[in-house]
Image: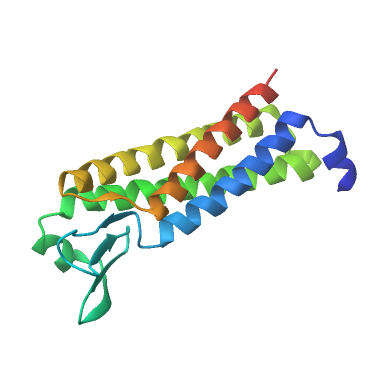
Length: 177
């Protein structure tokens, strides 16, 4: 196994490392509830944050509470369409990134999988993950910005993950040469 690592090209090694880091960053960002935040300057100790799956609200004197984002919650705010779209494309992006990483690991360490078709599949799934995640971030960020929210650290991690996945895809394309 170590022999295969040593004989692999630098582009492919870099692609594997970048895609692995991208997946970790995106999973942390995807699962946390700080994609966007809003602080009200005229209210002390107030913070309102949203993620793809939960909403947190902190205010004095009541403290903080978390609501899961379900169909009733979305319907009460008339957010059903765009919010569900964001959740769906983010999930598709996550699935594509996991599939790309699994095929890349097989390509790396299983000699029978070291075919050009596998490399094409890796590239396809990597760039599909980038496309889906960018669509989700754009829709979510655009809608929430209209409501006075700003980017939170979770979305920042998701953005960093998608940028690294894009660079991993470029490294995979360079492997085709």
